Length: 120
Image (cartoon, rainbow, N blue to C red; front, side, top):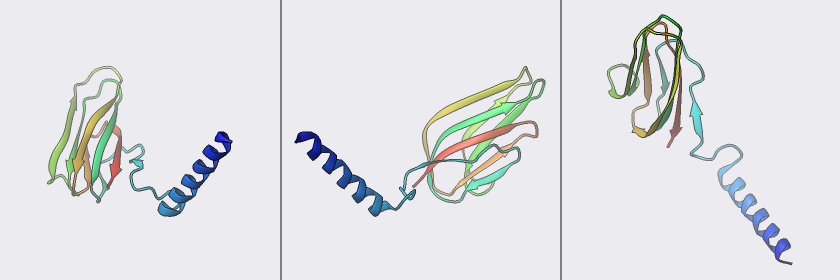
């Protein structure tokens, strides 16, 4: 009897949440820029920066700056310089850094990156 009641409650909660938010429309899903190789505006909404993955090939120096804004004239929220060395790949888990005017990434030529964020 308790198992059936628990199953009924779980089904009711599923129906309530799926109809309240719509399939795939829950407001706080993590998003990703996908692998990028050029400077670009990632989003124009507000949210939280959660992670940055940086890849620099062997022998190249690289760098990346993430701005709160739609261009490189925004506020710097994540700067990173990488000296020339062997192959370099790192995933920095930033403490959720809030941004209000979107995300813009300025990147040096040899660097590729993935930015992860949550929209409000």
